[in-house]
Length: 449
Image (cartoon, rainbow, N blue to C red; front, side):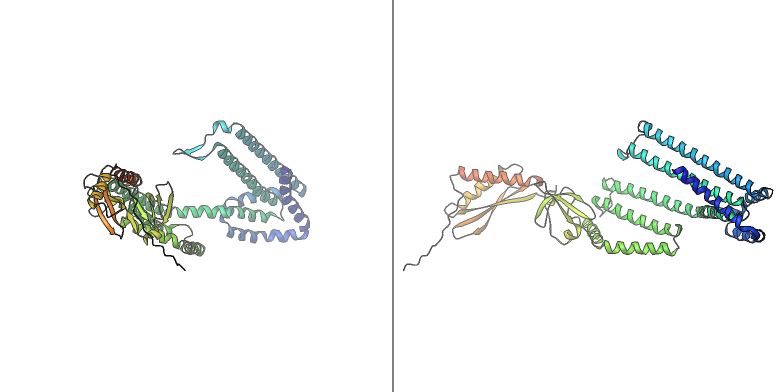
């Protein structure tokens, strides 16, 4: 069916040429006289046609001068038959190649893997090759068609001028593309040099950033945790500067359509990314404020957890219950942040954890203090030095409020430390024969009638 369709298409120019040949009659002489003028117009349209195609067309015209109409029709039919046979042979070879690829391709073709990441499976690669083979087959068929039509037209005087025009339609775009590529080579060298310099500038910048981050290179007033974000910022700035320098050398950069698309993309980006830009700027501010780092135990908006991710857009916390909470940087910038790890640095005494109990006035406060301090000293991960201490925070009508304070540097184990501390406090009061339950009094009035 496909072959019949191709034959039908190739027969169309012969039918058109024969019709014009028969109907030309008395107008044949006028057509021959005007051929020189038409030819000059075609030459003005395509210089490549005049150089490469016109000699072939002239040769065919000279060859046709001694041939009658039937002979020329026979030659045209022979050309069409040869092209049909050639197309059938090409399609047959491509079909055999596709079948062979389908049967043995899975054994010979390996999946495309880059750095342990599987980009394309064997089946996907085979489908991609089949797609390009099919595309190449259609391209060859189209080229044969566009070559056959002008040759058939050139066999008849009434349509001989159309051959040059059709060849011009084919060769003009190819010629313009080739000339454009040749003219663009100097700009291509400019772009290559600019990208080469930018790439090695980024490599040098990355080297210094890694050295600062590892502590091998120290700059006064510049913290190690600033190295990675500063490297990213400078990387974006260098690429933006590179794009700005390369832009004038891009093909079509001075056209109105190219500028219109650039303005449109800029407007869409500015309208759709206002909150994203805000988070990005807030992320930069938070980075240089240094309120916390990865692994710190912090409190943000009544959420306590460990910082597991910090980037230019969001902060993620992992709570003690293994819950992940995400905060946009813009929200964090306007919130209070409590960092528990800053109290556990080497030059600090440690984080103070505390617990409160209430007890009646019948028991001396010295006894309560001793029980609470001993309970704190028995607690695991509580430092012996500085020594735990007790604060009396409240004197109520029926009891006093005692607060035990102790130091620890194991910030990640705070919930566990509190649990052990509460257990030791209960054991301490039980061993002393004291009941932690405080007396409460309530006055109830009744109306007696």
